Amino acid sequence: MTNKPHPLSMASLPGLDKRYRAEKRFKFAGVLAVFSSLAFLGFLIVAIALKSAGAFQTYEVEILVKKEKYLELRDQPFIFLQSTMRYNLSGVVNGQAMREAVNMVVDGAEIDLLDHIENLQQNTRADGLGSYSVWVTLSNRVVSALSKQDIGTNLTARQQAWVEGWVANNKVRQRFNVGFLTNGDSRDPERAGIGSALVGSAFMLLVCMVLSFGVGILAAIYLEEFAPKNKYTVFLEVNINNLATVPSIIFGLLGLSVFLNLFGLPRSAAIVGGMVLALMTMPTIIIASRLALQSVPLSIREAAFSVGASPLQTVFHHVLPLALPGMLTGTILGMARAIGETAPLLMIGMLAFIVEAPDNIFDPASVLPVQIFLWAESPERGFEEKTAAAIIVLLAFLLVMNLTAIILRKKLEKKW
Image (cartoon, rainbow, N blue to C red; front, side, top):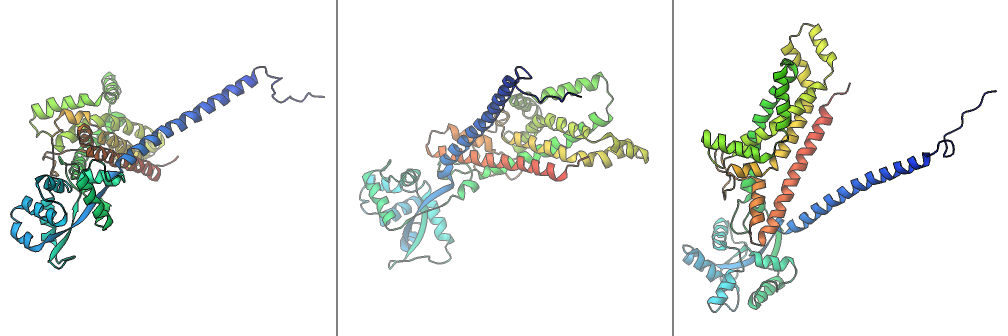
C-alpha cells in the first residue's frame, strides 16, 4: 500500500504563510505604485488643461463703425479707433475715459477694424446712420473678468458699466481662438500664438529625421552585419552606448562650437537645430536598430545564403525588411524625445523673438519648447494660459508620435 502525497499546507511547510503574506504585500505595493503614478500624471494633465482653457477661447464684442468716419479717418487708424469707441460707449467725455475705452479692446484693434471693413463684401448689419457691424477682440483684462464671471475684476467703474451693457445686449460672444494656432509670437498675450513655432518645429524635425534616420540606420547595419568584431568596433559600440546617456546640453555646446562658430551656419535656424538634435538622437536610433537586426532569426540569413545571395543582398533584401518595424519605432521615439528638448536649442541661439513663420530651413525660427520657455518667463498674467496651452499641444504631439510608434510596431512586426 503506497502512501498518498499530502498537499502543501501551512502545517507541512513551516514559514509558508509568511512567504504568502510577503508576496501579497509585494503585489499590493506594485499596484499602489502604478495607481499613484497614474494619479500624479492625471493630476498634472488636468491642472495644466484647466489653466490652458482660456488660451483656446477668445471673447469678442460687436461694435458699430460709422461709414462716414471710416471714409474720413481710415488713414489715421488710432484716431479712427477713438472715434469708433466714443460712438459705441457712453460717457467718453475726457482723456481718462477715452483711455479706458481704448483699453477695452486688444492692442492694435484699429488695424483689425480697418481689415474687417475692407474685407466685408456687403454690410452684415447697418443702422439708420449707415454703420458696419464688426467683431473686435476684447483686451485680456476684460476677458479675465468675463471668464471669472466677476466683471468687477481689474476694471474701473466705468468699464464695468460698459461690459455689463454689452453682456445685457448680447454684444459679447465667445469663440474658439484660431489665432492661437496660427499667429506668431507677440508682446501682447491676446495676439500671441504658436503658429510660427509649429512651422519651425516641423522644419527642425524634418532635418533631424533625414539625418538621424539615414545615418543611424546605415551605421547600425554596418556595425551589426559587416563590421569585424575586434577591439576597435568594441570601443566604438561602447562610446555609442555612452553617447545615448550624455546630457542634451552637451550637444548644444557641440553645435555652438562646430555648426555656428566653425562652419558659420545661420544662428537660430531650423537646420542648425535639426543637426544638433540629430546628433543627440542618433545613438538611440543606432542602438534600437541594432536590437531590431538582432531580433531577426539567423535562419533568414542562412536561407538567403543557401540560394546564392550575397551578404549585401541578404541584409537589404531579407533582413532589413523584417527589422524595419523596430527601426521605425526607435526612430519615432527618438524624434519624440527630440521635440521636447530645450537646452541644446538655447545654446545655439534659438531664443530669439520670432514673429513670422520661417519659409525654409535656413530662416530664423522658433520651436515649441523654446516658445514655452519664453512665455513661462513673461511677467504678464495672460501668458500663463498661453504657456499651459502650448504645453498641452506639445503633450498631444508627443502622444500622437508614441501612438504612431506602437501602431507601426503592431502592424508591421513579424512573429516566428
